Amino acid sequence: MSEHSSEIVVGIDFGTTSGVDEKLVVNLLMPSRHSGVSWAVNGGSKVIRLINNWPDPTAQNASKDKVPSSISYVDGKPQKWGYTVGLTDESFRWVKILLEENHKYITTVEPVRNSNQLLTKVDKKAHEVVADYLRLLWEYTLDDIQKFHPTFREIFALRVVLTVPAMWSPAAKDKTLQAARMAGMPSSIKLVTEPEAAALATLKDKAADNALKVKDAFIVCDAGGGTVDLISYEVQQLNPLKIKECAIGDVFLDTNFQKYIETIVGEAQYNSIKETNRKKMMKEFEYGIKRTFSEKTDQTYSVDLRGVKDDYKNNVIDDTITVSM
Image 1 (tube, rainbow, N blue to C red):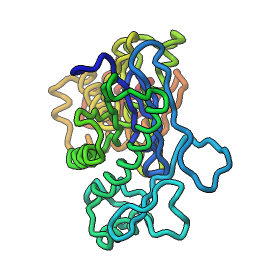
Image 2 (cartoon, rainbow, N blue to C red):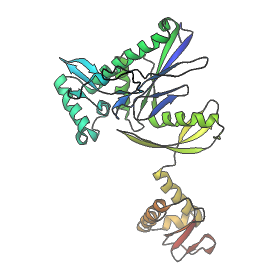
Image 3 (cartoon, rainbow, N blue to C red):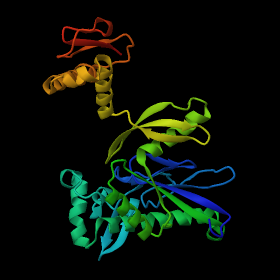
Image 4 (tube, rainbow, N blue to C red):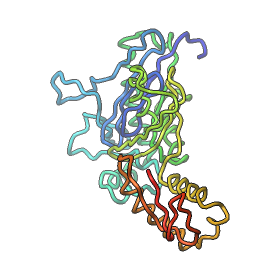
């Protein structure tokens, strides 16, 4: 932390849900057309400040937790941003999506397509536009911090946490970091995926209420305006709360079902099953079990299992196996 005795953590959720690190909750909804920032001193009571007084020429004493993620240019220089961008102004919207090359939204979603075409007109690259927007957002954040801590630059180090979609490629992550540093943010920026941020934000209160146990597993569906992520996590420890990604997805269900069948019939017999019969078995598992599964604990399901001997003990009868879930 160099010569500073403490730090201020600034959270920026560069995605479509609430983002946190273990100390901070923040909202920045870039693809869903809005952004937000929160910050807190990492010490003492750690009170979180959610910026809700964004510049808005049309508002009358209204507080808004988010600010539009739009920016307009004149002669290649930023002119307006956030609420100051008018409805008729030619502006960038959903520009974050352009950080991911060949994203399908570039040709299928109008705001993204328009922003992509506008890049040529202002002679800028996507990460440069993102940097311009983040610079304005960052400067406003620093002004907000100064209102509460006039000498914060001498007292506190600054730490920034940015969220990114879980499906973001390494190249898109690099461009995100590059844009943030170009915006004047500290070089030691930490990236965290949006589902992980959402999980930490949601589970922090659950842990405080003693509603969580180590080894608990859960699935986070982060469905936002521009990206959708579905990831599973397992609780590793409670204080401080620590989670890790665990594999309980669609592909792993298939693999575990195949291993289960192999355990029942034995490796040699399983390997002797014709490939076409295995595919038929997995097709029935897909449509007859996975897609019809319910919370009832007494459900039984049957799938074809051709090419193995009957085993009444394990419910393998007449080329069919019956399993309980």
